[in-house]
Structures are given as structure tokens and as C-alpha cells.
Length: 262
Image (cartoon, rainbow, N blue to C red):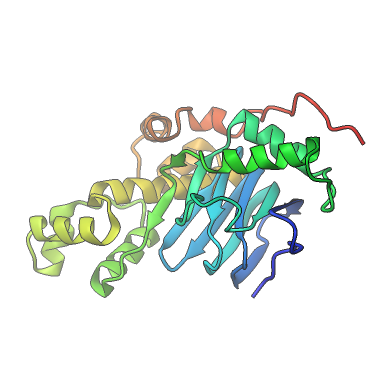
């Protein structure tokens, strides 16, 4: 188990981290909650409940005690926050990929220079308190691929992930299982919280994010995922993330507008 670098009197510790493509952190957990805010590259987070994919400029929230592994795609630069789970009563208890606001980005940047023994009542404390307030307001993004617990559905999901270029239709899969499409749909919704078609689409989106982060062209990604054309893949990508894949990884993250005094 990894132990978070929080002294007893600290609510938050912020670290700047960097990983090379293909690096991996095996299954571990922390006594503190954790926010990983990516600046470049993609971070894949795995738990028993599924997979979360964290693109540049976004973050992933990991509650205290959750066992997780990390895989890094592309050159990953990130900031990680270890947060006392008692620092705020209403911090999320669920793993989730989250949007990072411009204000929170600024606060994280400034917190890197705040010493752990900062004085109470001053500017440093106010910054850290505001940072904690912002952590309560993180908007969730649809970049989680939930894992079913039912063994039959889990096997189907694994087959889908291994052959994303195939056309996966609910009725065809149900027929192979010897059940009706309605029964499969109901079981899938109960186990994952997603419709079958939405799960397949999200699996393709997350795989596409990984491939794009590793430098694969949009054309090659689209064909590998079974799309008839790059424009069809781009349309799905834009509906999910609000920007085309050709633009997504070329977007420059906003730099902090102010710098802390030493």
C-alpha cells in the first residue's frame, strides 16, 4: 500500500509528477483521497469497478482506500493532490473523471509553492481552503467504462474490448447467449448503468483516446475501431468531448495567470 505524504496537520499536499509513455503503477491504495490533474498525455485508472480514462486538462478523483492501478499513455505531466478525506464533509465518495475549472487549475498551481507548515489565518491558508471548496464542485465527465460483475456479461465485455472493430449489435449478442435482446438489455443496464450500445460506444471512445495520445492518426484510429470513415469517428468523439479528435490533443492548456510570491 502506498502511503500519502500528508503530515498530521495538513489537509492537502500537492506534487508535480511526470511519467514516460508505457510506465505503470501496480494496484495500490492511499489513506488519503487523491486528485490527479493531467497536463499532457493520458492516464488510465483501473479499479474493481471498471476503467477511467483521463485526457489532458482533466482530472480523476480517487476516494481514500480505493485500490487502483495507473497506466500512462504518451508523455504524462500531471499534478497530484493528496487530500485528507475529513477535510470537507461532502467530498465525493466515488471514483470519477472530472472537469478542472480555470480557478481550480490556478489554485493547484499556486499550492505547489505553499510550504506544509504554512501559518494559519494568512493568504496561504485561504488559498488552501478555497482549493478544498472547489474540490466539492467537480463536474463529472463520461469517461468511465463500468465493469459488470456477472461473469457472462464480463466475458462479453472482454470480447468487445478485444474486437472493437467488429459491429456489436444487441440482438446478435443476445442470440449467442440464448436469451432475448430485452433480457440482455435489462441485465446490462442493471450491471453497468449503461445501455449496451452506449457501453460499446464508450469503450471505443476510451480506446480512441489511448491511441490518439500515443500518436496514432485519426484515420488509423477510426478504422481500427470499426468506423466507416474518420468523419464518423470524429462525430462520435465530438459529441462526447465537445471537440474533434484532430483538435483535442493540440489544445493548449491555459497557463496560470498569476504566480505566487516566494
